[in-house]
Amino acid sequence: MKKTVYYYVLKPINIDDEKYAQVESFADDFNSIISKLFLEEKNSRKETLTKEKKILYLSDYKYDATNRIAYIKVTSAKYDAVRNVVNTNTLEDKTELIKGVSDGEEESNHLAIKFISAKKTVCLFESNYYGIGFTKIIKYFEKKIKTAHKESEDGVYYNINYQNIVSHDFLAALEKVNRVKMVTLEVDRKALGVSDQKAFADRADLSSTADIVFKPCGKGATILTDTVKAFFKMYNEDGMSVRSVSVDADSENKEPIQFNTEQMKEKVSKEVEVDANGEVDTQSMFAIFEELLEQV
Image (tube, rainbow, N blue to C red; front, side, top):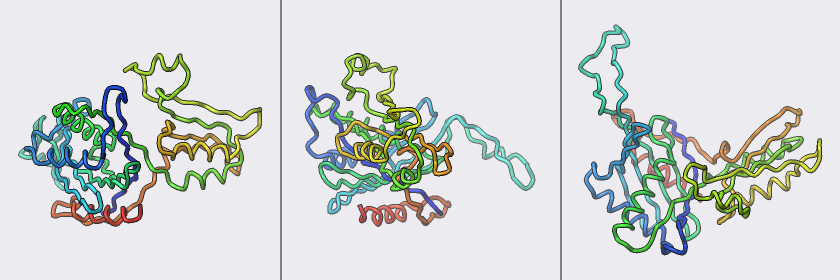
């Protein structure tokens, strides 16, 4: 079975430097809390996503202390999705197989997190259309970690920020354009230095990011590729507030094209072994992660 693996960078972000202590070691903190979570009863690990009508829970976890890599399996299931089951040869209903509203078919996603240094943590994510999204999984761990720190009253409280690693195709695409007509930077709204923007920084009904649009200095002019590369460098630098870079341009044939860092995520396609049920074999997936992480 072919599976697509995406690359991300993770970073713990202190919610308020004046109120909370900075976590000393993201690797030790994550492993300590999540390894204890895995020892709990399965139902205690469960999180319900009411809007999506899905549940998810940590279903496998192991930590390679030597290489500082966490191998993770998260299982999810969609409920309240009752469907008739039919024999596709005869079209007869299989009434004994009809699910109840609280029943769901399990799907799994696998991850591996390598804590390379205090400033660099790389995460590999196995995409599964029928499983759960990467953002929901990160939010799941974030919530469990916050709960653990709140219970211990140790003064640590942080979010887990993530950013996709961008393929070299972004720069390759940039070299092929005839004219760059517009560049849009998505930035953290709190980082903006405009007082009017800061006044709305904590509004829950507004996105935590804002778009800054740059256009050429004159009609028919172009934004230099070196300028776009400088924005791209800001996107990749640690501590910068740029979350994504989007480019509107004309191609070499003067056709309008668009590309951005979100579309051009670094990814690889790998052949994975399957188990008796035709699902991804967890140990096979973990072995692929180990091989890929040797290169980062």
